Amino acid sequence: MSSIDWIVLIGTLGFIVLYGVYRSRGTQNMEDYLIANQSLPWYHVCFSVMATQASAITFLSAPGQGFSDGMRFVQFYFGLPLAMVVLSITFIPIFHRLKVFTAYEFLEKRFDMRVRMFTVTLFLLSRGLSTGLSIYAPSIILATILGWDIMWTNIFMGTVVLIYTVSGGTKAISHTHVQQMMIVTVAMCVAGYMVVHLLPADVGFVDALKIAGKAGRLNTIDFHFDPNSRYNIWSGIIGGFFLQLSYFGTDQSQVGRYLTGESIGQSRLGLMMNGLLKIPMQFLILLVGVLVFVYYQYNPAPLFFNKVETDKLKTSIYATNYQQLEQKHQKLTFERQQTVNALAKAMDSEDEAEVNRQKTMLQTNEGIAKEIRNETVALIKKNNPTADTSDVNYVFLRFVLDRLPIGLIGLLIAVIFSASMGSIAAAYSSLASTSIVDIYKRLYRKDASENHYLTASRVATIGWGVFCVAVAQYASKLGSMIEAVNILGSLFYGVILGIFLVAFYFKNLGGKATFWGAVLAEIGVVVCWLSDIMAFLWLNVVGCILVILFAWLWQFTVEKAPDKA
Image (spheres, rainbow, N blue to C red):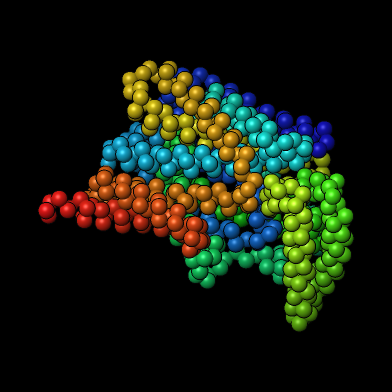
């Protein structure tokens, strides 16, 4: 990057961190540190909820997802608005009325400590692991730009966020989230405009969409019901609804955001606006990836987008093999450009026969390109057995670094960093608040002073920061980050949601039945995942239903057995 890009990058991130610390000065007790004294307006709640979910994974991996798989991932969010309605009606009033710090305090009041601790364990495990992925995503950028070792990059990234999280708590996080989402929205719109601007002069936005459609990248909605298909309208509305309901209703990283609302109405409005804005935002991000795909139909694309690994190949014993693959790739690129130009002319002249012929040729070209890419991946694996061979996370980053003008590169890199900082900070805060309120204060120090708990919260934040950085060291093995983080959530969120639904709506089910129902349900979810029985979104539905089913069976068979005897 140029010196101007570095100035833009450092200036943007510095402003966000300093602004958050400044606005949160004076934090003196645990209530202020963990839930900002429930004093924030709806727009803070909305932007904070969105920023918590929109990590660097969103802005790195989602465009790559659109590039490689088209728009169908947006169906993942179709259940979100419905989930926001349910949360606004049920969860928010209960949490506000009980004046809890975490969602899990309610479970002990409804059941017993055993159910509370099991749910806390599931949350801490899932959130701690997924936060490690959120740290790894921006570390890719530093490692790519500066050539840093990924281990030290993860340590640097995880530590930077701790500065304002430890110093300012939830209030600092919320104030920085507002700035982050404003910058993110502007920057992604500019990125979309620039991709279209860089296309050939005779190719406009509509033309680009037509090419993307013929290449199978505008597959936004799939009505075909298939439990093994990851993304269709049914898995999005049903599986996505259960996942989003669990994530926003029971995950402390999100509950902690809307508990900061100054009233039930402000928290509700913030959540509802999140439900309305999230799908268009995700659609825009995926569309940017699709437009990048169209750009590379007219321009040479990298054979493999992870430049760190290809640079290693060029100086290895496999350099000659790689050079031969690049020559094949260049020839294929020229043929693809010819095919795309012919396809565009056929569409302009409305010659359907020629359109279909060129479309078939384009699909054939893409198939050969995948074969060449697979050969490249095999070479990378031979040269470096620990290499990250999934380059979907590098597509947008490589385009930004190679093609965008000076200044805008720094801004977009800052966007990815700031998004990461927001989600990581919220995760640190939720992990710390859950550890202190649900474990430390409940089991070890019930009557300590406010200053003691405030200090303990900061120590817990640092401890979880260390854990998440350690997890980040292994994240490169998981492929597409945006899929990996949602698969990880689906392993736990359905069961957690099931526990809360039993608590809210099944008053005849007790703590022991719910505990064993949840344990058996979690085992069932893991078995379904390991057996690859269904697409991951359906695991949320299965987990939730199994908790209710097993708890009911336990209550009315095992629990009733002594009475019958």
